[in-house]
Image (cartoon, rainbow, N blue to C red):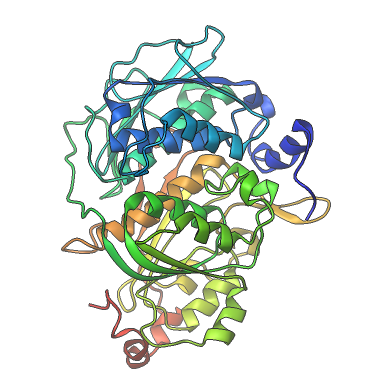
Length: 457
Protein backbone atom coordinates (compact mmCIF):
# COMPACT_ATOMS: atom_id res chain seq x y z
CA UNK A 1 0.00 0.00 0.00
CA UNK A 2 1.02 3.63 -0.41
CA UNK A 3 2.59 5.37 2.61
CA UNK A 4 0.24 7.28 4.89
CA UNK A 5 -0.33 10.81 3.45
CA UNK A 6 2.11 13.40 4.76
CA UNK A 7 0.03 16.47 3.90
CA UNK A 8 -3.46 17.48 4.95
CA UNK A 9 -4.45 18.04 1.33
CA UNK A 10 -3.56 14.50 0.31
CA UNK A 11 -5.17 13.02 3.42
CA UNK A 12 -8.49 14.83 3.08
CA UNK A 13 -8.65 14.17 -0.67
CA UNK A 14 -8.85 10.46 0.14
CA UNK A 15 -10.53 10.49 3.57
CA UNK A 16 -13.40 12.80 2.56
CA UNK A 17 -13.92 11.54 -0.98
CA UNK A 18 -16.76 9.19 -0.07
CA UNK A 19 -18.51 11.75 2.12
CA UNK A 20 -18.20 14.40 -0.57
CA UNK A 21 -20.12 12.14 -2.93
CA UNK A 22 -23.12 12.59 -0.64
CA UNK A 23 -22.72 16.20 0.40
CA UNK A 24 -21.39 19.59 -0.61
CA UNK A 25 -17.89 20.25 0.75
CA UNK A 26 -19.29 23.23 2.67
CA UNK A 27 -19.22 21.07 5.81
CA UNK A 28 -15.40 21.32 5.80
CA UNK A 29 -15.61 24.83 7.23
CA UNK A 30 -17.68 23.89 10.31
CA UNK A 31 -16.27 24.62 13.76
CA UNK A 32 -18.06 22.54 16.37
CA UNK A 33 -17.90 23.15 20.10
CA UNK A 34 -18.90 20.25 22.36
CA UNK A 35 -20.22 20.91 25.85
CA UNK A 36 -21.72 18.73 28.55
CA UNK A 37 -23.82 18.84 31.67
CA UNK A 38 -21.49 18.39 34.67
CA UNK A 39 -23.26 15.30 35.95
CA UNK A 40 -23.68 13.64 32.54
CA UNK A 41 -19.97 13.53 31.79
CA UNK A 42 -19.26 11.73 35.06
CA UNK A 43 -21.51 8.76 34.22
CA UNK A 44 -20.80 5.67 32.15
CA UNK A 45 -23.62 6.42 29.72
CA UNK A 46 -22.57 10.05 29.40
CA UNK A 47 -18.97 9.16 28.64
CA UNK A 48 -20.03 6.48 26.14
CA UNK A 49 -22.19 9.06 24.37
CA UNK A 50 -19.45 11.69 24.32
CA UNK A 51 -16.73 9.23 23.35
CA UNK A 52 -18.80 8.06 20.37
CA UNK A 53 -19.65 11.64 19.42
CA UNK A 54 -15.99 12.71 19.45
CA UNK A 55 -15.10 9.67 17.34
CA UNK A 56 -17.77 10.52 14.77
CA UNK A 57 -16.95 14.22 14.66
CA UNK A 58 -13.27 13.59 14.06
CA UNK A 59 -14.14 11.67 10.90
CA UNK A 60 -15.53 14.68 9.06
CA UNK A 61 -15.32 17.87 11.16
CA UNK A 62 -11.82 19.30 10.95
CA UNK A 63 -12.13 21.74 13.85
CA UNK A 64 -13.63 20.66 17.19
CA UNK A 65 -13.33 22.54 20.49
CA UNK A 66 -14.22 20.58 23.62
CA UNK A 67 -15.31 22.23 26.85
CA UNK A 68 -15.16 19.56 29.55
CA UNK A 69 -13.93 19.41 33.16
CA UNK A 70 -10.72 17.66 34.17
CA UNK A 71 -12.03 14.15 34.89
CA UNK A 72 -10.90 10.57 34.45
CA UNK A 73 -12.31 8.02 32.06
CA UNK A 74 -15.01 5.93 33.72
CA UNK A 75 -13.63 2.66 35.14
CA UNK A 76 -16.23 0.62 33.25
CA UNK A 77 -14.70 1.96 30.03
CA UNK A 78 -11.07 1.67 31.09
CA UNK A 79 -10.11 0.24 34.48
CA UNK A 80 -6.88 2.26 34.41
CA UNK A 81 -8.96 5.48 34.49
CA UNK A 82 -6.76 7.67 32.31
CA UNK A 83 -7.61 11.31 31.81
CA UNK A 84 -10.75 11.63 29.71
CA UNK A 85 -9.27 14.52 27.73
CA UNK A 86 -6.10 12.58 26.88
CA UNK A 87 -8.13 9.61 25.70
CA UNK A 88 -10.42 11.76 23.59
CA UNK A 89 -7.64 13.67 21.84
CA UNK A 90 -5.66 10.50 21.16
CA UNK A 91 -8.72 8.91 19.58
CA UNK A 92 -9.51 11.97 17.46
CA UNK A 93 -5.98 12.57 16.20
CA UNK A 94 -5.66 8.91 15.26
CA UNK A 95 -8.75 9.33 13.09
CA UNK A 96 -7.53 12.65 11.67
CA UNK A 97 -3.86 13.55 12.29
CA UNK A 98 -4.35 16.92 10.56
CA UNK A 99 -7.42 18.09 12.48
CA UNK A 100 -7.63 21.00 14.89
CA UNK A 101 -8.92 19.43 18.11
CA UNK A 102 -8.56 21.09 21.49
CA UNK A 103 -9.71 20.85 25.11
CA UNK A 104 -10.50 24.34 26.43
CA UNK A 105 -12.19 25.90 29.47
CA UNK A 106 -14.57 28.33 27.80
CA UNK A 107 -16.46 28.09 24.48
CA UNK A 108 -14.74 29.88 21.58
CA UNK A 109 -16.74 32.80 20.17
CA UNK A 110 -16.04 31.74 16.58
CA UNK A 111 -17.70 28.30 16.89
CA UNK A 112 -20.50 27.84 14.36
CA UNK A 113 -22.27 24.79 15.84
CA UNK A 114 -22.71 23.47 19.38
CA UNK A 115 -23.26 19.83 20.37
CA UNK A 116 -24.34 19.50 24.00
CA UNK A 117 -24.63 16.31 26.06
CA UNK A 118 -27.27 16.03 28.77
CA UNK A 119 -29.28 18.71 30.54
CA UNK A 120 -28.67 22.42 31.25
CA UNK A 121 -27.85 23.68 27.78
CA UNK A 122 -26.14 27.07 27.69
CA UNK A 123 -26.11 27.99 24.03
CA UNK A 124 -22.76 29.30 22.82
CA UNK A 125 -23.02 28.98 19.04
CA UNK A 126 -25.54 30.13 16.43
CA UNK A 127 -26.97 26.62 16.03
CA UNK A 128 -27.11 23.96 18.73
CA UNK A 129 -28.33 20.41 19.28
CA UNK A 130 -28.67 18.47 22.51
CA UNK A 131 -28.12 14.70 22.69
CA UNK A 132 -29.18 12.65 25.67
CA UNK A 133 -29.70 9.01 26.61
CA UNK A 134 -31.16 6.77 29.27
CA UNK A 135 -30.80 3.01 28.86
CA UNK A 136 -32.46 1.98 25.58
CA UNK A 137 -33.69 5.52 24.93
CA UNK A 138 -31.92 8.26 22.98
CA UNK A 139 -33.11 11.82 22.48
CA UNK A 140 -32.15 14.69 20.22
CA UNK A 141 -33.55 18.22 20.45
CA UNK A 142 -32.52 21.72 19.52
CA UNK A 143 -33.23 23.36 22.87
CA UNK A 144 -32.66 20.47 25.27
CA UNK A 145 -36.25 20.03 26.44
CA UNK A 146 -36.06 16.26 25.82
CA UNK A 147 -32.82 15.68 27.72
CA UNK A 148 -32.78 12.88 30.27
CA UNK A 149 -31.33 13.31 33.75
CA UNK A 150 -27.92 11.67 33.96
CA UNK A 151 -27.88 7.98 34.92
CA UNK A 152 -25.13 5.41 35.35
CA UNK A 153 -26.93 2.69 33.40
CA UNK A 154 -24.58 0.04 31.97
CA UNK A 155 -26.63 0.03 28.75
CA UNK A 156 -24.51 1.51 25.93
CA UNK A 157 -27.14 1.32 23.18
CA UNK A 158 -29.09 4.49 23.91
CA UNK A 159 -25.90 6.55 24.39
CA UNK A 160 -24.30 5.36 21.13
CA UNK A 161 -27.53 5.99 19.22
CA UNK A 162 -27.82 9.45 20.78
CA UNK A 163 -24.28 10.28 19.63
CA UNK A 164 -25.16 9.22 16.08
CA UNK A 165 -28.31 11.34 16.07
CA UNK A 166 -26.57 14.34 17.59
CA UNK A 167 -23.63 14.24 15.18
CA UNK A 168 -25.98 13.70 12.24
CA UNK A 169 -27.78 16.89 13.22
CA UNK A 170 -24.46 18.73 13.51
CA UNK A 171 -23.56 17.49 10.02
CA UNK A 172 -26.86 18.80 8.68
CA UNK A 173 -26.18 22.16 10.32
CA UNK A 174 -22.76 22.17 8.67
CA UNK A 175 -24.39 21.53 5.30
CA UNK A 176 -26.75 24.46 5.83
CA UNK A 177 -29.79 22.18 5.68
CA UNK A 178 -33.24 23.75 5.82
CA UNK A 179 -35.31 23.30 8.98
CA UNK A 180 -37.61 20.78 7.27
CA UNK A 181 -34.62 18.55 6.56
CA UNK A 182 -33.29 18.57 10.12
CA UNK A 183 -33.94 15.72 12.54
CA UNK A 184 -37.13 16.58 14.41
CA UNK A 185 -36.93 16.76 18.20
CA UNK A 186 -37.74 13.26 19.42
CA UNK A 187 -37.01 10.38 21.76
CA UNK A 188 -36.00 7.12 20.07
CA UNK A 189 -36.64 3.72 21.64
CA UNK A 190 -33.92 1.35 20.43
CA UNK A 191 -35.66 -1.61 22.08
CA UNK A 192 -38.89 -1.39 20.10
CA UNK A 193 -37.43 0.59 17.18
CA UNK A 194 -39.93 3.41 17.57
CA UNK A 195 -39.96 7.16 18.25
CA UNK A 196 -42.03 9.61 20.25
CA UNK A 197 -42.23 13.37 20.63
CA UNK A 198 -41.94 13.35 24.43
CA UNK A 199 -40.08 11.50 27.17
CA UNK A 200 -43.27 10.77 29.06
CA UNK A 201 -44.69 8.55 26.32
CA UNK A 202 -41.75 6.12 26.49
CA UNK A 203 -40.39 3.98 29.31
CA UNK A 204 -37.10 2.12 29.53
CA UNK A 205 -36.73 -1.65 29.19
CA UNK A 206 -34.77 -4.44 30.83
CA UNK A 207 -31.13 -4.92 29.99
CA UNK A 208 -28.74 -7.71 30.98
CA UNK A 209 -25.33 -6.23 31.93
CA UNK A 210 -22.21 -8.07 30.77
CA UNK A 211 -24.18 -10.62 28.71
CA UNK A 212 -22.79 -13.97 27.58
CA UNK A 213 -23.49 -13.82 23.85
CA UNK A 214 -22.19 -17.23 22.84
CA UNK A 215 -20.28 -17.98 19.64
CA UNK A 216 -20.56 -15.35 16.91
CA UNK A 217 -19.45 -15.44 13.28
CA UNK A 218 -18.94 -11.99 11.70
CA UNK A 219 -18.67 -12.04 7.92
CA UNK A 220 -17.07 -8.75 6.91
CA UNK A 221 -14.83 -6.36 8.81
CA UNK A 222 -15.75 -3.07 7.16
CA UNK A 223 -17.54 -0.01 8.46
CA UNK A 224 -20.62 -1.64 10.02
CA UNK A 225 -18.60 -4.58 11.33
CA UNK A 226 -16.05 -2.27 12.93
CA UNK A 227 -18.94 -0.36 14.53
CA UNK A 228 -20.29 -3.64 15.91
CA UNK A 229 -16.85 -4.41 17.35
CA UNK A 230 -16.66 -0.88 18.78
CA UNK A 231 -19.98 -1.40 20.57
CA UNK A 232 -19.09 -4.91 21.75
CA UNK A 233 -15.98 -3.45 23.35
CA UNK A 234 -18.18 -1.11 25.40
CA UNK A 235 -20.80 -3.74 26.20
CA UNK A 236 -18.59 -5.74 28.57
CA UNK A 237 -19.99 -8.84 26.88
CA UNK A 238 -18.36 -12.24 26.77
CA UNK A 239 -18.30 -14.22 23.55
CA UNK A 240 -16.23 -16.11 21.04
CA UNK A 241 -16.06 -14.06 17.86
CA UNK A 242 -14.69 -15.23 14.51
CA UNK A 243 -14.18 -12.46 11.93
CA UNK A 244 -13.85 -13.19 8.21
CA UNK A 245 -12.52 -10.60 5.75
CA UNK A 246 -9.51 -10.18 3.49
CA UNK A 247 -9.47 -6.40 3.02
CA UNK A 248 -6.94 -3.95 4.48
CA UNK A 249 -7.47 -0.60 6.19
CA UNK A 250 -7.34 2.26 3.69
CA UNK A 251 -7.55 6.03 4.12
CA UNK A 252 -11.03 5.92 2.60
CA UNK A 253 -12.18 3.75 5.54
CA UNK A 254 -11.27 6.40 8.10
CA UNK A 255 -14.36 8.51 7.40
CA UNK A 256 -16.84 6.01 8.88
CA UNK A 257 -15.13 3.12 10.68
CA UNK A 258 -14.80 3.92 14.40
CA UNK A 259 -11.85 1.59 15.04
CA UNK A 260 -9.69 2.42 12.05
CA UNK A 261 -7.11 5.21 12.14
CA UNK A 262 -3.49 6.02 11.40
CA UNK A 263 -2.31 3.30 13.80
CA UNK A 264 -4.22 0.60 11.91
CA UNK A 265 -3.55 1.90 8.39
CA UNK A 266 -2.47 -0.88 6.07
CA UNK A 267 -3.31 -3.68 8.50
CA UNK A 268 -5.71 -6.47 7.60
CA UNK A 269 -9.07 -5.30 8.87
CA UNK A 270 -9.60 -8.50 10.84
CA UNK A 271 -6.32 -7.91 12.69
CA UNK A 272 -7.38 -4.38 13.61
CA UNK A 273 -10.69 -5.61 15.02
CA UNK A 274 -9.09 -8.48 16.92
CA UNK A 275 -6.54 -6.13 18.49
CA UNK A 276 -9.26 -3.70 19.52
CA UNK A 277 -11.30 -6.45 21.19
CA UNK A 278 -8.35 -8.07 22.95
CA UNK A 279 -9.25 -8.83 26.55
CA UNK A 280 -10.34 -11.57 28.92
CA UNK A 281 -14.05 -11.56 28.00
CA UNK A 282 -14.01 -11.61 24.20
CA UNK A 283 -12.03 -14.30 22.42
CA UNK A 284 -11.70 -12.89 18.92
CA UNK A 285 -10.13 -14.76 16.01
CA UNK A 286 -9.40 -13.20 12.65
CA UNK A 287 -9.58 -15.10 9.38
CA UNK A 288 -7.82 -13.02 6.73
CA UNK A 289 -9.65 -14.58 3.79
CA UNK A 290 -12.79 -14.14 1.75
CA UNK A 291 -15.99 -15.95 2.72
CA UNK A 292 -15.76 -18.61 0.00
CA UNK A 293 -12.19 -19.44 1.05
CA UNK A 294 -13.30 -19.61 4.69
CA UNK A 295 -16.05 -22.09 3.88
CA UNK A 296 -13.72 -24.21 1.78
CA UNK A 297 -11.05 -24.21 4.49
CA UNK A 298 -13.28 -24.61 7.54
CA UNK A 299 -16.28 -26.49 6.17
CA UNK A 300 -19.82 -26.09 7.48
CA UNK A 301 -19.40 -27.60 10.93
CA UNK A 302 -22.62 -28.28 12.87
CA UNK A 303 -23.36 -26.04 15.87
CA UNK A 304 -20.07 -24.18 15.62
CA UNK A 305 -21.63 -20.70 15.81
CA UNK A 306 -24.78 -19.53 17.59
CA UNK A 307 -25.33 -16.36 15.54
CA UNK A 308 -24.05 -15.23 12.17
CA UNK A 309 -23.56 -11.51 11.50
CA UNK A 310 -23.62 -11.13 7.68
CA UNK A 311 -22.00 -7.70 7.34
CA UNK A 312 -20.21 -8.12 4.01
CA UNK A 313 -21.66 -6.18 1.10
CA UNK A 314 -21.59 -8.51 -1.89
CA UNK A 315 -24.81 -10.27 -2.83
CA UNK A 316 -22.98 -13.46 -3.72
CA UNK A 317 -21.79 -13.70 -0.10
CA UNK A 318 -25.36 -13.50 1.18
CA UNK A 319 -26.55 -16.13 -1.26
CA UNK A 320 -23.72 -18.44 -0.24
CA UNK A 321 -24.44 -17.92 3.46
CA UNK A 322 -28.12 -18.77 3.01
CA UNK A 323 -27.23 -21.93 1.10
CA UNK A 324 -25.05 -23.00 4.04
CA UNK A 325 -28.03 -23.26 6.41
CA UNK A 326 -27.16 -20.46 8.83
CA UNK A 327 -28.45 -20.24 12.41
CA UNK A 328 -29.98 -16.98 13.61
CA UNK A 329 -28.85 -14.11 11.37
CA UNK A 330 -28.55 -10.53 12.64
CA UNK A 331 -27.37 -7.67 10.46
CA UNK A 332 -27.69 -3.99 9.65
CA UNK A 333 -26.59 -1.95 6.69
CA UNK A 334 -26.49 1.56 5.33
CA UNK A 335 -28.32 2.53 2.16
CA UNK A 336 -27.31 4.77 -0.73
CA UNK A 337 -29.61 7.56 0.47
CA UNK A 338 -28.93 8.41 4.15
CA UNK A 339 -30.72 5.30 5.44
CA UNK A 340 -29.93 2.52 7.91
CA UNK A 341 -31.57 -0.92 7.74
CA UNK A 342 -32.01 -3.44 10.54
CA UNK A 343 -32.42 -7.13 9.72
CA UNK A 344 -33.05 -10.44 11.49
CA UNK A 345 -33.68 -13.88 10.01
CA UNK A 346 -34.96 -16.97 11.84
CA UNK A 347 -35.34 -20.16 9.85
CA UNK A 348 -38.97 -21.01 9.14
CA UNK A 349 -40.29 -17.78 10.69
CA UNK A 350 -38.78 -14.79 8.90
CA UNK A 351 -37.73 -14.18 5.34
CA UNK A 352 -34.13 -15.12 4.53
CA UNK A 353 -31.08 -13.34 3.15
CA UNK A 354 -31.85 -14.49 -0.40
CA UNK A 355 -35.38 -13.12 -0.11
CA UNK A 356 -34.32 -9.84 1.52
CA UNK A 357 -31.83 -9.28 -1.32
CA UNK A 358 -33.42 -11.08 -4.30
CA UNK A 359 -31.38 -11.87 -7.38
CA UNK A 360 -33.70 -10.05 -9.75
CA UNK A 361 -32.77 -6.67 -8.22
CA UNK A 362 -30.12 -4.69 -10.11
CA UNK A 363 -26.65 -5.04 -8.64
CA UNK A 364 -26.53 -1.38 -7.54
CA UNK A 365 -29.53 -1.98 -5.29
CA UNK A 366 -27.86 -4.91 -3.59
CA UNK A 367 -24.98 -3.04 -2.00
CA UNK A 368 -25.25 -3.39 1.74
CA UNK A 369 -22.89 -0.60 2.63
CA UNK A 370 -23.96 2.22 0.35
CA UNK A 371 -23.99 3.36 -3.25
CA UNK A 372 -21.07 2.09 -5.27
CA UNK A 373 -19.36 4.72 -7.36
CA UNK A 374 -16.41 4.78 -9.72
CA UNK A 375 -12.98 6.27 -9.11
CA UNK A 376 -10.00 6.32 -11.45
CA UNK A 377 -8.40 3.22 -9.96
CA UNK A 378 -11.07 1.31 -8.06
CA UNK A 379 -14.75 1.02 -7.19
CA UNK A 380 -15.63 2.66 -3.88
CA UNK A 381 -18.70 3.25 -1.74
CA UNK A 382 -20.09 6.68 -0.95
CA UNK A 383 -20.62 7.02 2.79
CA UNK A 384 -21.68 9.19 5.70
CA UNK A 385 -19.78 8.86 8.98
CA UNK A 386 -22.63 8.42 11.47
CA UNK A 387 -24.70 5.83 9.56
CA UNK A 388 -22.32 2.91 10.05
CA UNK A 389 -22.09 3.54 13.79
CA UNK A 390 -25.88 3.58 14.07
CA UNK A 391 -26.07 0.35 12.08
CA UNK A 392 -23.54 -1.25 14.42
CA UNK A 393 -25.60 -0.15 17.42
CA UNK A 394 -28.67 -1.82 15.89
CA UNK A 395 -26.81 -5.14 15.57
CA UNK A 396 -25.63 -5.02 19.19
CA UNK A 397 -29.12 -3.97 20.30
CA UNK A 398 -30.49 -7.15 18.71
CA UNK A 399 -27.88 -9.24 20.54
CA UNK A 400 -28.90 -7.54 23.80
CA UNK A 401 -32.61 -8.20 23.16
CA UNK A 402 -31.72 -11.81 22.48
CA UNK A 403 -30.80 -12.25 26.15
CA UNK A 404 -34.30 -11.28 27.34
CA UNK A 405 -37.62 -13.18 27.51
CA UNK A 406 -40.23 -13.01 24.76
CA UNK A 407 -37.69 -12.65 21.97
CA UNK A 408 -38.10 -11.23 19.37
CA UNK A 409 -39.47 -7.99 20.78
CA UNK A 410 -39.37 -5.96 17.55
CA UNK A 411 -39.96 -6.58 13.83
CA UNK A 412 -37.34 -8.27 11.67
CA UNK A 413 -36.94 -5.24 9.40
CA UNK A 414 -36.61 -1.53 10.09
CA UNK A 415 -35.52 1.49 8.07
CA UNK A 416 -34.35 4.73 9.69
CA UNK A 417 -34.01 7.56 7.18
CA UNK A 418 -31.45 10.11 8.36
CA UNK A 419 -31.98 12.14 5.20
CA UNK A 420 -35.23 13.61 6.49
CA UNK A 421 -36.61 14.52 9.90
CA UNK A 422 -36.94 10.86 11.05
CA UNK A 423 -40.57 11.58 11.86
CA UNK A 424 -41.21 7.85 11.56
CA UNK A 425 -39.26 4.62 11.83
CA UNK A 426 -40.52 2.17 9.24
CA UNK A 427 -40.59 -1.26 10.87
CA UNK A 428 -42.47 -4.45 10.09
CA UNK A 429 -42.04 -8.22 9.83
CA UNK A 430 -40.86 -9.35 6.42
CA UNK A 431 -42.34 -12.69 5.37
CA UNK A 432 -40.78 -15.06 2.83
CA UNK A 433 -42.18 -15.22 -0.69
CA UNK A 434 -43.45 -18.56 -1.90
CA UNK A 435 -40.55 -18.72 -4.36
CA UNK A 436 -37.89 -17.87 -1.78
CA UNK A 437 -34.89 -20.17 -1.37
CA UNK A 438 -35.67 -20.80 2.31
CA UNK A 439 -39.05 -22.30 1.40
CA UNK A 440 -37.28 -25.23 -0.23
CA UNK A 441 -34.61 -25.74 2.43
CA UNK A 442 -34.91 -28.81 4.62
CA UNK A 443 -35.87 -28.35 8.27
CA UNK A 444 -34.09 -31.62 9.05
CA UNK A 445 -30.82 -30.37 7.58
CA UNK A 446 -31.27 -27.02 9.34
CA UNK A 447 -31.77 -28.81 12.67
CA UNK A 448 -28.71 -30.99 12.05
CA UNK A 449 -26.49 -27.94 11.58
CA UNK A 450 -28.07 -25.69 14.22
CA UNK A 451 -30.04 -27.80 16.71
CA UNK A 452 -27.30 -27.49 19.33
CA UNK A 453 -26.77 -23.75 19.05
CA UNK A 454 -27.50 -21.45 21.99
CA UNK A 455 -30.52 -19.71 20.50
CA UNK A 456 -32.03 -22.57 18.50
CA UNK A 457 -35.26 -22.55 20.50
